[in-house]
Length: 124
Image (cartoon, rainbow, N blue to C red; front, side, top):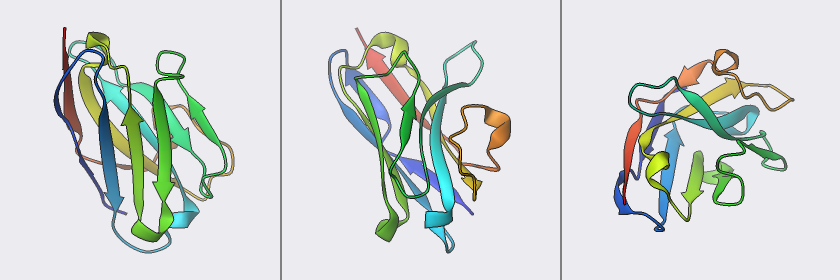
């Protein structure tokens, strides 16, 4: 499956941004999806994940209550709504997919497919 992210850009602290990730190919509903991010000089970290059906979600503590992951299976798209953004949210955000996994995964190694990333910059 091929993943293409969009929606990144420059936003002021306290603002909102919605990222989208469109997946090509069939059977999108069989893939669990996630968002990761990588800030300059830091390792890539888990942000949020959603199960195949969309019934279960999981968030990193750093974004819980501010970010919401969702998916539109009819559009082969997963979203990340980011509210109350902080300068420390500045990073390249990556969409990831894993086929037919029941339990939500937070480790990078669990995901088989990755997008190219989209830059989000939060100014103070």
